[in-house]
Amino acid sequence: MSGQLLVQPEDAPAETHLRVRFRFADDQGTELRFVDQRTFGGLAVEDADPSDPESAPLSLGHIARDPLDPRFDDTAFLAALRRRSSGVKRNLLDQTLISGVGNIYADEALWRSKIHYERPADTLTRAQAALLLASAREVMSAALAVGGTSFDSLYVNVNGESGYFSRALDAYGREGQPCNRCATPMRRSAWMNRSSYHCPRCQRLPRQTTGS
Image 1 (cartoon, rainbow, N blue to C red):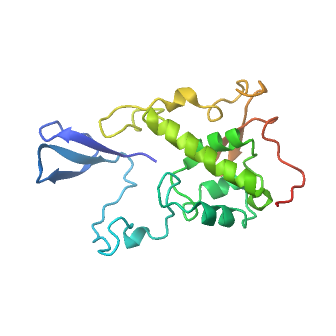
Image 2 (image 1 turned 135 degrees about the vertical axis):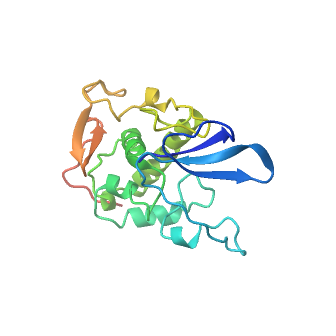
Image 3 (image 1 turned 60 degrees about the vertical axis):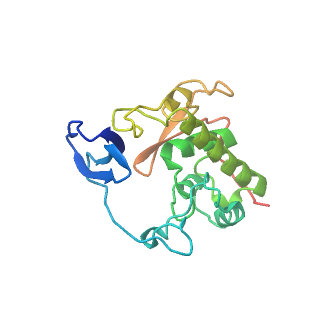
């Protein structure tokens, strides 16, 4: 979606779609601004669990941790993934199972893992599921190192700077371009009102696969 959290000087002109300002008692001169062009965002104030300061607010309890979180449970995720019969990409975007991946990084992780996006998750071997999780982590870490993936001015960091991971994408947005692994032209397919990109050679959909 769109929307940004920006760190700005207090006297900086207000952005057109500025919704909320946060000012801090221990930081004079700067503020955190929430700018939301499409008004999809919301704001809530909740007390932390005193017994676990790092816990998520109760209203977010249904959202899983992201794979870069030190408390992400690999074993539980892999077991849950391999119990699901729906397509593996659908599960990567299910935030009750894993959060933070998104459509772009799902395509990138699947390309690295050589897994077709529609392959039923319960047909993955343990090794394939583990490789997919490792690939998602690699992609997200690489993207963070260069500020994320920015295709336009709506996707920026807290300093208003664009990310450059779009220059390193292997799958997303590369329809018709040669696969960086086998040189087969990449393919784009309509998927759940979005686009899904894959290599038809490296990421074939098995006719019949049995998990083990």
